[in-house]
Image (tube, rainbow, N blue to C red):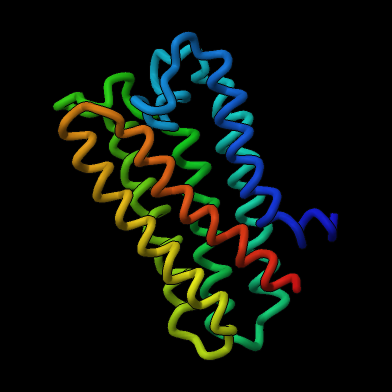
Length: 198
């Protein structure tokens, strides 16, 4: 159990890639380029029950475990404790996003309450993994390489979030930009996890 907790950040970073891919296999004609990851668990989706079981719930647990690891093992360093809390928040919101599905049509003008909760939880998830690497960037406690990687991941996340907004408005390939935007956040977690273990 101790090993699982210690490496939970790395495991989560890898799990999310395979989890989304596996769920998509059971969703006929699912498009990774045109559809959001959350559409795998949306109302009416053929993987509505499967996707949260293999993605949101185990991923949320892994995020929470890694956040707790940071808080307990670096309790003397406030910036790292705050990073740990942000990872825990990310995990809790991952659970919320799994429990409250988005609507089948992401372009609906009148989203359900469940979809609104899902969307706001997604916003909090985004913010938590912006705040965490930003703390690394501005903390002299961390080495220059990890601070540079953290900055690049923030820039990459914002850039593709902007591209996502444009692609969503044009109804083209928002799935590509969503994956790249969140991918930079997961890349940060992966690199940071190795750093704190190192």
